[in-house]
Image (cartoon, rainbow, N blue to C red; front, side):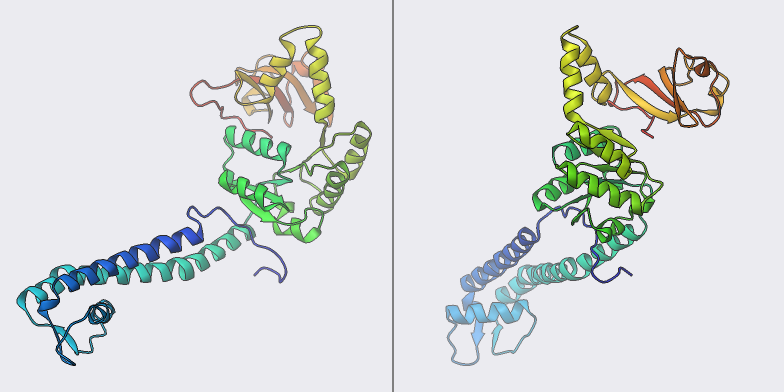
Length: 348
């Protein structure tokens, strides 16, 4: 059971509630109008035991009691044609109207209650998911890139305080949770301690650093990537517990500087950063068959650039990279698969 005051995840419902209700009611009233028209055209086949005259109001009344199978008997079909119409036309319409109302009750009471229960169970069982705290420009681009790399949107949880941003995340297929990511309860609700990665981009450096501090407190072993825009806040983000600190302003400046000495450097760096390019960077653990090999002879066929061993980085030109060891993390360049724009390797 969820603690009182905590929020549940939600996921996009394909048809809005108001539109679903409008469609169902329109269909029901259209069928009722059709039956009224049929009864009015064939009113000579009806008998009114009250005054012997069948008025339009009598036709509407008879239609309603006929559709609802009430059957008071004061108005009844007496001719063979009227009875045939009731059997062949009105009875199927009556069943259709009943199914519409029963389906509506199922959809809005049983099904939606079931969906809320199912999402609560998904929330309780969350593990190995990616938590995105802040869905502004950087956060939304990160989610789009994750999905392009093959990450199932159902394994991504987005937290933001703006409903418009959450609606966009829902359209992408992600789970969303409205709330303040600086609060412990919000992060506990997304099972942040069981996440595989945490991406933070709150739009303001002070907020991002506070979220980082809160997330690190609740998830001491989960990798955290934080976006900050001021250079002097990078150290603060690292001290708050960020595993990776990304400064888009600094990175943009580096790309601009690269274009001053060559027209292709910036394009290649952008190519590496995105799955949509011809090649991209992958970080992964060393494979069993690669142990003992040099970094330049990877089983994947990629170009090895760097290994991480015991917390230290070694380039492909250094002595340590000439023989891979168990536990090494490899950073390599691999070509993007031409068939679907993605490769099987996943970002660690």
